[in-house]
Image (cartoon, rainbow over all chains, first blue to last red; front, side):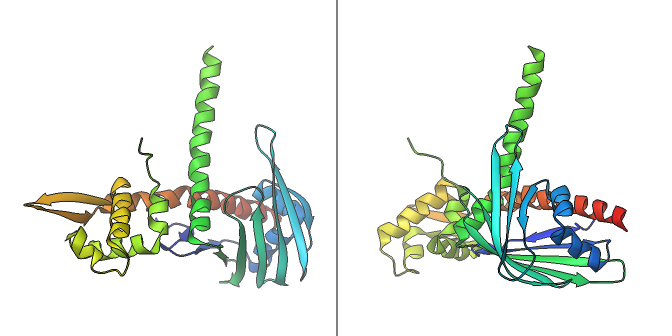
Length: 154
Length: 104
């Protein structure tokens, strides 16, 4: 089966490409990126600020199971309704620095659309640190789960 | 103690990537590899050591010479590294799709 979400990260390059086709009209896909309540829902984060305009900025905050707060922020460089968002993205206190994101929205048919995110990092090393994150996180999750099971055995 | 090297650290360096490319098609001795670069011989040796520690290269004794050859299994591991990242976005986008379908 072909994968719906594709990630292209070429060796030695400091950028990556994420593409995804949705069974959604273009307008709804775009809306999911600009309506704070909807962003909160699918990103699993709190939206503290989201100014959808040129020179606007945004600030998201998530709380992990341990109660630690993590913040994401960025500046919106350009935004065109149902077409594109160009913004910076920074996961605060993480080793992968500030990224530049080109988010493109495309109509395929009346009921389907395509999302393309082109992310540029400061260096290859920064990009690879980001790619590794869910891997490390996955290991931690498995570890926490084991801990939980072990605690229940006591 | 020799700390285990990180495979990402190994491929982050342009000279090391060039060495991997060079060895992708043929096995070579350290001397033959070094002759392809302007860098000093000990520098190339250091790169070979790092790549070997990461298991991206394997050494093979042939007579008096030691040949280096590329070991692709470890590169596959790099591809597998991307998979959790892809899955994370896939889950997120599935969620987006489900939420927005209800809005229709």
